[in-house]
Structures are given as C-alpha cells and as structure tokens.
Length: 283
Image (cartoon, rainbow, N blue to C red; front, top):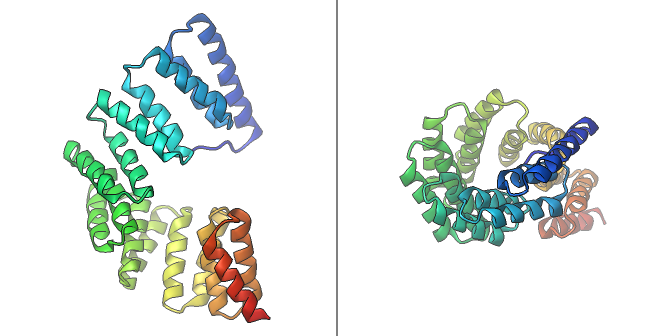
C-alpha cells in the first residue's frame, strides 16, 4: 500500500480531492469520480471518507464489478478480511474471470487459516490464466503458511520460470528452502534476490536467518541490521536479531530488540516470552 512520504505528497493529494469535489458537484451520478476521490482519501489516511465514497460508488453502480473489487482492496489493506471476502465474492459474481480477485480472496482465506478455500481460489486463478506468475507466487506463500515448503518451492519455481526478474519470488523460494534446511539453495536465492533489488529488506532478513541457523552470528547481525535500516517497523526483524544476540550471549542487546518488537506490537506473545527468558538470564 502506498504511503505519503512528504508534505508535498500530502498537499498534492489534497489538491486532487479538491478537484474531484468540483467534478462531483458537476456530475454527482458518475461513480468513477467517487472511486478516484476515495483513492485520494486513502493516500492521506482519511479512511472513513474513502469508505463513504466507495459506498456511494456502489450505490450508484451496483452492477459494476469494479466497485466491489475496489472496496474489497480497501478492506484487504485494512486487514478486514471478512469484508474483503464479501466484496471480492460479489465482484466475481458480476465478473467471474477477474484473476486478481481470486488471488486476494485466496489470501484472505489463507490469513484465516482456511487453506482449502484458499487453494480453490488460487487453482481457479491458474485455470483462468495459467501464464500469470503471481498466481503461483501467492499459492506458494499459502503452501508455506500451511507447513508444506516442498509444494511452495514447486510453485515458486513456476513463478520464476514466468518472471525471472522478480526479487520477491527468489526471496520467498529462499525461505521455503530454509524451512527444508536446504541452506545452500536458500543462500543462492537470497543472494540473487539482493542482486535484483538491493533495497528489499525481506531478502536481508531471510539471508540473516540462514546465517543464524548455520551459527554465523556476526554475518546474521549485519544482514538483520540492513533489513531494519530498510524497514524499521517489522516486528519479525527485531525478534530474529534479538535471537541472534541471545545466541551471542549479549543479553542486553537481545532485550533491547525484544523491547522494540513489543513497542511495535505490545500483544505479541512470542516477543513477550523471549523477553522474559532473557530477563531471567540477566538476573
């Protein structure tokens, strides 16, 4: 999801909204204007206003699949998976062949641990468009979430065969290889992912995890430092680095990382447990 990076970006989005206000005043029944204004509201985190516009677009054009897909994406980005599933389902009733809706509805099912429905959606997406790499990619992620890294590797292989320049595909395959303890293959994938996109934090996290799993702690710290420098709000990066500091018996640094993880997500049970273990070692 795109976020604004400067006051200039924010001001631009507000100007866009003002322009759509004027357009809607002249053409109040044009549903696409409400969709476009909703997107601008999302840019400045005015989510209630965005939702009002999505709802208005659906009111004006209830037979248009696009309005349901748009609102479904809005719900998906807010982690409201039941609402997203409802909108994707309604959109697919109106436009059965829209592959991205199957993928994102499949992801919703996967996040809810309903892997049977998730796989049915990914399979349908592949049936409709067998040459679309992202279908195999998303299905591969779901295989891995469901504890099947072998099938995940097979799907990532297929995704890579269709799009050999996507860093995320190699990164995710590297993670599946890591699950299988195929560390050499994993390292090859992470290195290639980094060569394709040197600013992709997840690849450094993945490679750092392999260094940790193979007891090369200093290399692990260096990669995890880089991951955090690139993306400093991902709790898993701090937890993994904390685990490496723990392996090095540098408990104060481990505690600092677990504290940071809990600052990001105070409810995370893993971080809580690890923090307690380190506190015991320090006492």
